[in-house]
Length: 113
Length: 114
Image 1 (tube, rainbow over the protein chains, first blue to last red):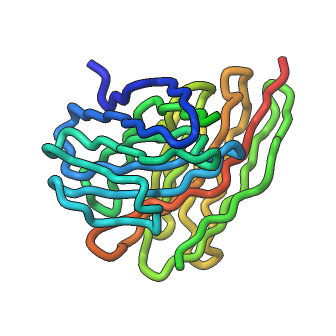
Image 2 (image 1 turned 60 degrees about the vertical axis):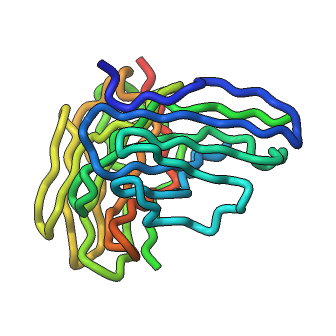
C-alpha cells in the first residue's frame, strides 16, 4: 500500500542514451512533482503538474520531458543523457495547497557513465 | 525569490544531548514552513509543520516555532537518540505562478553517537 512509488530504484546507463522513470501515487492527490537531489543532498524542484497540466517548469533542459497520463501518474523521460544528469530523482505528490506537505517516493538513483 | 538557509552540518551529538538546527527564510508571500527528515536510501518524510506566525509544530519530541519577526523556524529536540541520525531539511511552501512551490534548505546531517 505504498503511497508514492517510483521505478526503477537504480538506473545505470551510458551517455547519450534515453531513459524513463515512472511514478504513481495512490493518495488521491491532484498535484505531483519531480525533484532532483544532487550529491550534496541539495533538492531542487524540476516540474509540477496539477490534474495532468504542467504548472511549474524550473528552467530544466528540454532533454527532460515529464508526462502525466492521469493525475495519479507522472513519468519523467530523459533524452541524450549527460554525466551531469547523475543524481537521485524524487517524485512527490500533495493536495496542492500552500499548507499541504509533500509525500515523497523513495527515489531513483541515476548514474550516467 | 524565496529561499531557505539552514545551518551547515554535519552535527555530531551524543545520545540524550539537546539538538538545535537553525533555519531562516525569505519569502515574498506568507509561506507555510516545514521540517522534513531523510533516512539513508529513502525519500523525505514530513517531520512537522507550521502554517502561521507563532504556530508551534511538534512530532516525536521535535519542535519548531514559526517566528515571523525573525523569519526563522529552528528545529529543537530535548534529548536525541541514535535513531534520530538522518538528514534534516527545512522547507517553505509559497505561491508560485500557476500554483504553489516548496523550496528546501540545503539539509543538515545529524549523527548521534551512543
